[in-house]
Image (cartoon, rainbow, N blue to C red; front, side):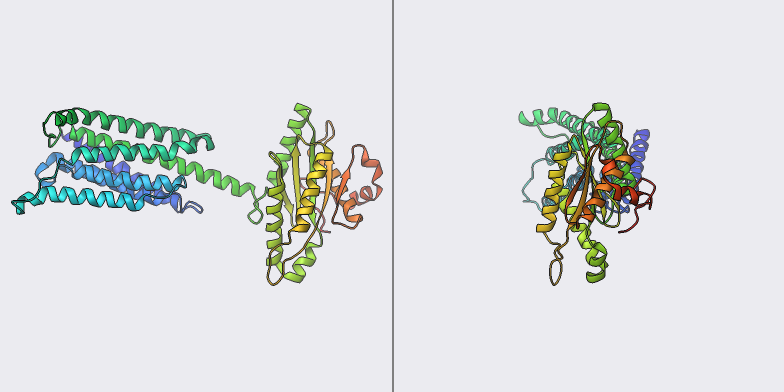
Length: 422
C-alpha cells in the first residue's frame, strides 16, 4: 500500500514538472494565447489530486470520498479550456466553472448537512456523476485535438495522436470501472463508498493527466518550432519569403520543373518611385505601402505560387506550371489591382504603381540565369516609362543591348549580389 502512495506522489511531481514546462513555453513570443496557462494550472491541480489520493488512502477520515474526484474534475476542466484555446475554439469556461462550483457545493452539502440539519434532504450519490463528467471532459479533450491532426506534421501529429489515444483510453477505462456499480444501483443497490478500486483509479487518472500534459507540451513545442521557422523565412513587414528562403524555393522549383519537364515563369516586381514616397510621406507611410502591396500580391497569387522580398521595394514571384503568357496575364492583373487600389493613408490615400519583368524558364536554365533575364525585362519596363509589364522572351538575350550593357555595372540580382538601387 505504501508503494502505491509513493507512485501516485511521483505522478504528482511529474505533473508539477509539466506545469513548469507549460509556463516556460508560454513565455516564448507568440505563445501567449495557446492555452498554456490553463494547462499549467491543470497540471498543478493534477498534482493536488495526486496528493489528495495519497492522503485519502492513508487517512480516509480526513477527507470526503469525492475529494480526489473533485480535484480531477477541476484539472480536466481547466485543461479542456486550454485545449479549446489551443485549437482556436474558445468557450465553455464559464459553464465549466459553474459545473465545478456546483459539484463542490453538492459534495459539501452531502457531507455537512446530515451533521447539522436533521431534516436535510439527502442527495443521490455524486460519485457516478463526477465519473461521468470526467469521461465527457476526456472525450472533449480528444475532440479539440483530433481536427488539428491533418494540419500538423512530424512531432506535432504524433503528439496529437498520442493525446487523443490517452484521453479515449482513459475515458473507456473510467466508463468500465463504473459499469458494475451502476448496474447494482439500477437494481436498487447503493453506490459503494469508497469503491474497492478507488485508489487505483485515482492513480491511473493522475498518470493519464500527466500523459496528456506531456503530449500537449509536445504539440505546443511543435507549434513554437514551426512559428520560429516561419519567422526565420518570412519578412516581418510584408509576410512574404525573405531573400535567402526565396532563392532556396526558386532553386527547388527549377529542379522540379527540369525533372518534370514542365513550364515555369518568374516575375521581378519593383515599386515605382518608392524613394519619392518615402521622401514625401515618410518612412512609416512607405512601410504601409509595402504592406499594402504585399497584401495585394498574396491575393493575386495562384495556388502553388511563391512570393519573396529581395530587398527594399523589390519583390519576386515564382509561378510553377505556368507558361509565359499565363504568367504575363497574372502580372497584368496584379499591376491593375495596384493601380485601382491606393494604399489607405491620412489625409489622402497613396497611389502608386509597379513595374514588372517576366521571364519563362528555358530547359536546363538555373535560378540565377532565370532571375537575371527577369531583371532584364524589368529594366526594359522602366525604360518604357514604368507602370507596365515587360517580357523577356525565349532567345531574347541578343535583343536587349541596353540591358546587357547594364549587366556590366552590376545591376542584376543574384543570390549573393544585392541589386543597385534605382
